Image 1 (tube, rainbow, N blue to C red):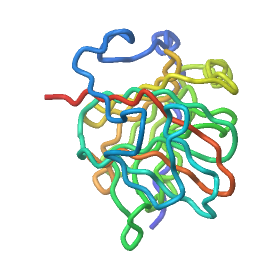
Image 2 (cartoon, rainbow, N blue to C red):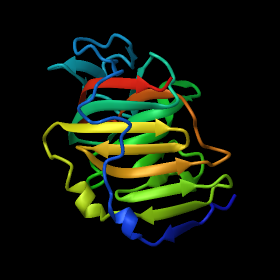
Image 3 (spheres, rainbow, N blue to C red):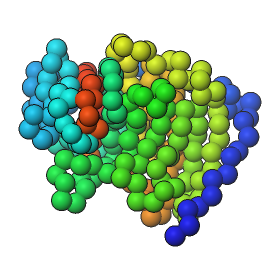
Length: 233
């Protein structure tokens, strides 16, 4: 079928006041539960040899020849706030939410993904294994995108992409928050909102699912730690 066309909405003065969007203050950990113990991969599931724990962080070994994920097996949350730290060195990686297993591949995951460097340097909301071309890139740095029920996409460029990406710390630990609230998904890095989606696509919007971390293979080097979640009641 033909992909729905995207319509770009002009910047508004209100939109320029881009501020972090969070359900709680960044230093308020009330109600959050750790989902990684910092010692081993208890509660997580992956292909043997592709992920390990090093220096208190879930780390891909860099030995995988193709993409794979390590999957949290503690549930399939719908509305939640996920917080973690990541450090990227090279390769392709991401944080997966509201996702599901790809048929015949127990450690391949399809659904919403926050790109974790490079994408020079990030801001991408991606639909991994996108079912149609128009779902591949859901939002880029500084964008607020909306998918209507018929799949039509509108994009509001609410902030300068380069200024947003400047908040990413090269060769260092970065704080990431992912908020999923109804059809709205927001990614915040180091206190700055990188991009946002409101997804009401009747065919492909996802309201709940797995949380996972991606290693795209071919020598990827990335680590994640301090992973905790607050699920809406």
